Length: 235
Image 1 (tube, helix red, strand yellow):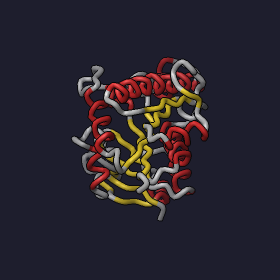
Image 2 (spheres, helix red, strand yellow; image 1 turned 180 degrees about the horizontal axis):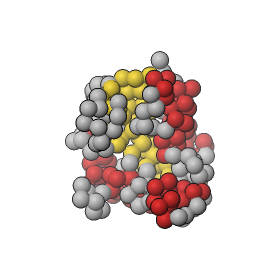
Image 3 (tube, one colour; image 1 turned 135 degrees about the horizontal axis):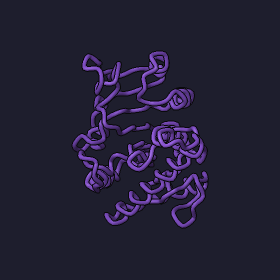
Image 4 (cartoon, helix red, strand yellow; image 1 turned 45 degrees about the horizontal axis):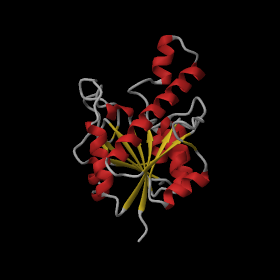
């Protein structure tokens, strides 16, 4: 039986404790869960770099030009990817680190041939460096990499337990949405993902699950319960 392929897009904040200090606890939990799901699932991971640097946020605040800020943010994802690969290998999970920004000392350049080779070996694929170009978010990168690995679903692990009508951290009246079409998400301009990611996913019929990556056993719950979190689908 072939394994179900998942592209997991995860925030760089998994490397932070609640008080903002660095921790490996969350990452080690994800690795444990991916190992438990290994008989039925294979994962590719696109990891953010917000624990180090957010190009659009920190760059603009510091006065760095936008294109440079985005490059710095892409480098931040490579640092996180290197940590993720190291933790995976320490826990006997074979992993390949792929870099969209050429850095042979860190990981392999991204190509379809390299991706296919890692998939055939059953490795965890860790995608870093964004798309290699500024002005593209890790959300859009996640859809791109999902298409390259022919993912069955995209799982976006964030700090919110699903999609809401407004930011629940700001608006206490925000209502959770369990299922929504891409078209409705675009029309309502729901900010859980950017519009480019929505459009790409809709065009290629790539279902997206949104859930709280910090919830206990979040990956196991996503694998077992289709109602865990929220789902965006092609209507």
